[in-house]
Length: 292
Image (tube, rainbow, N blue to C red; front, side):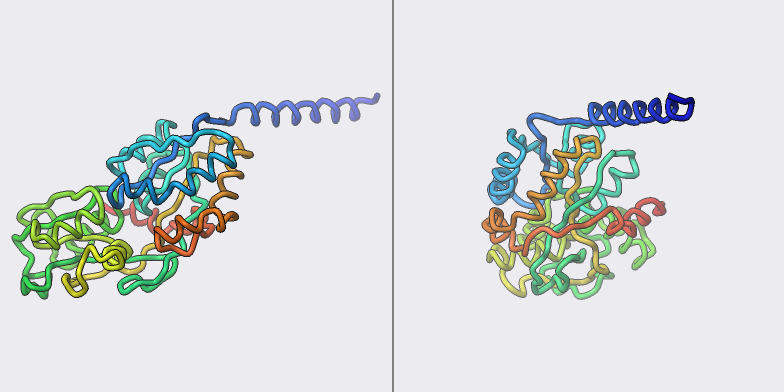
């Protein structure tokens, strides 16, 4: 064997060894830990996701542990700590997690059914809501009133509202309103303004449509004072340290098995899951990176 042949054999062994080290360094968690951002009642939300959880357990041959997530921040911290492997996030909480160094990648989102206030199949809006019978028709009438947000890391329920109020009134949100509270989820924020617990609330258009669909809110009960531009809908993300075979099976379950998840799609009033990449959320990432 000449020098060059020996050198070629040496580098071939090095490449094989490198691939083996890479494969061995990936993570294969048992159980796999899954978290959902709080949108509605946690028990009801979990019940709707059961077909997906069961299909993941079947596909991955392991238990899926649903991690209790009372806030968006708990999921962000879990992804950073490696105690959550798979999660549904909001666009802003996804961007926050990336900005903080979380090793995650977006791979799926939801195909939305258009509703009275959601005019896209892949995006939604932030809405500022008041009770129609309160006679409030302009944002200027809300100065010194009470407001409900959803969660500090919610795109439509906190982050875009802060920007909007500052731009529209030249005043920080907390200074413009007498009292600002966090409801914890979109349905609670909508209920807070509907029941008169606050004068106004920010929530997502998709969750307002859901409240109307389920008749937990009467039509024309609320007035929309402001709406945001379209926001790309919630990403589903997985940790990049998961072994490739596990990651691929997760993606297949979300994107390629609609029949098994038909009941879940019906409950969530969506058409299914659609593929996305990190690029779909580049504008949200830019916004979170550049805002003061």
